[in-house]
Length: 148
Image (cartoon, rainbow, N blue to C red; front, side, top):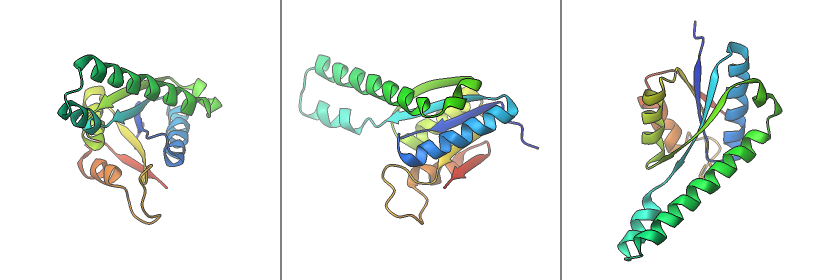
């Protein structure tokens, strides 16, 4: 029987991610597990900016602003769930392709359960699984709980 100790909850700050976070917190409370709230900043924007010969300092400033904004968004998202204070929650930020970074984080942290929304901010239809969650589901080494 699965008794998770480390739960990874990827977020894109959508209402779907809120539901996944709620489930992750509930499971963590039940098993006294740690929650890793994880957001990935896509790096395609930086590569486009570099192509236009913007100074390195401006790019670094833009990347720092993205990280700061993401951290504030994670704090705001976590604040929606008062019971989150009953579990240990870590907030992490990755940069790159979302599903690849989620899978790297799984291995790096020794995650034993991923709780992820079936749709994210870019959910095109109610009845399809999003590409990020689909790739995580296919390639994760630990159990994955898809939330609706």
